Length: 433
View 1 (spheres, one colour):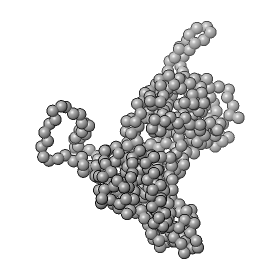
View 2: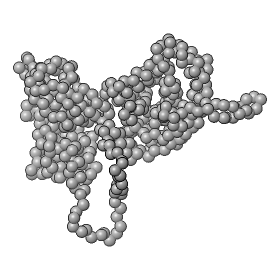
View 3: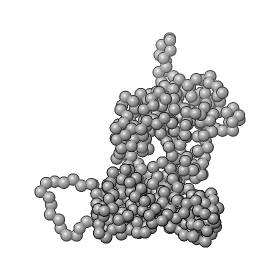
View 4: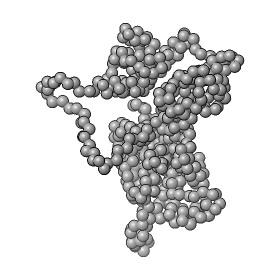
């Protein structure tokens, strides 16, 4: 018999931890490899984690409601025969901790020298990248962190521990404080909200809290600039109206405007590849793959952004099937972690809600996002060889928000205009083959 540690697997790009929602197996139960072991929640998705080995569960290391760090053990399984991954010895564990510390130092820029720890702290005490990031942002010294009592495994400091400590530190002191000689500026305090007996109070769910946090972070990180164009969608509307019934009959799919819009965006990205980028500190990463994120509204009102990977490899038929598939699975909560990772550029079709224009918020670490408004009939000037005429055209506003640290007005404006040009030049005689 041998014992094996089951490690929390990678859950997607930039995800460092997950919350354990429920264990699907109990201590003493047998589990087969690839059977689902537990259900977890990340800031992007709820999903089930399979076991990497077969055996009997001997010990659960991360309880329901606790945080599981990616790459850390979550339970111990007893297997028959020799273990592929035996439990580490004390020396091996120490080496692993040192490797983790070196990785965290590289990621966060915070020095973790065990010899500099306070007298009452363990020389090999581990802190997750999230805890270190919060500590750095809040100005918490390593001495304070070492002295903080943790509620996690082996006394580790969890996210809840550090947030509770920060909240305690920020509580006002009862004793009067003398005013400084020179004026200082503090963060504005939240304005008290008046609540009447007829008001309904609803606690934010976990996904809404995460969306709020991501949106606030994006506005804080990236200086948003927006450009707008009005596009003549008449050729696209006429073509779709003429083909939608035969398309449904032949391919079994409804063709919406979304795959046509994505196709135009992909063509424009090929013309302006620098818009297909991400930011990593002071580095700009220009992406080779064109992975289009597509904002989908869920029945509960929340928003999720599944990704069409290598969108440039699909024709219009393939894009239609892909759009319909991920939209359906998103609304049925059947997306997988890989469906939500790797996006390089995002679109939002706000026209489905009847909105004519919007200023979308960039999905970090991308550098731009585009919103398509509702298509409306409008009077417009039509230029002909015989002179200008007034006619009825199908018009749509396109909004383009971009990170002005990376994307200047020239690139941001040219890109959205190029998307518009491709839509206005849509071939009415176009064949799907």
